[in-house]
Image (cartoon, rainbow, N blue to C red; front, top):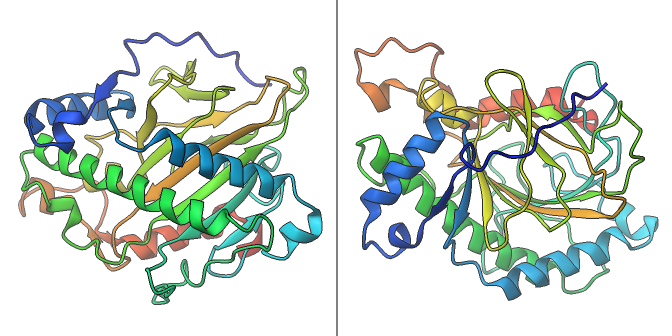
Length: 318
């Protein structure tokens, strides 16, 4: 049975305005706030992110049209071996011992202006765009670029907060392994205590940038095991430290378990960017803390780590 979540204590998940990081007027102050939040719960509401509301609406509306389209249309872009396309409900299990997730997902990645995509790693390749809706590709590609820009500002902020060169985390990010997804949560029975939209998990990569809708359902677990509601706050994104950033900082930044339970009786949709650098980027905390640092975990490439995690989580990869 799911533990009942507490109402959010707004002091636990801070709101950080990144305007002065984006425009350079006071990057240090924003970096300090990001640094403090990342060492505590690892979740941050980010305002001043710069993504136009119209762009968010266009992406969200096109995604809804896709998930409401025929099964035949969705099946036409069933997830590929490169982790691109549609994953049906039940296609992911994010925690041991729980039912498969109720959610559906549509995934895509970097696509250059000429339509080409990198194909140098098993977790990326050609994007798959359905016939319906026709505008999905344009809206999704634009949102990917805008969210990616936010992620780059944040990674500069984290580097400054750690007293590193501001481009430290971006040194090998010219061909990023980042993935974007629309995640659709159908309504679920209020008394179904064994079913999650997404089961308890930590995110796999470096950083997650999440645009919630106004329905709610995101819950975050604190260090005492208590689940806290993380409801939407208008005009903000939710940003959280993921496993590879925690590993890169040897646990100084915290990757926190979270889950989604859609008790609203309505559809719910999230726009997600999982930001990662190039696949051959070495995740090594000694680069952060110095060669003499005794790391808790060995160095690993971003690409190798993500392959291992994806094999565990997604049924189609087994």
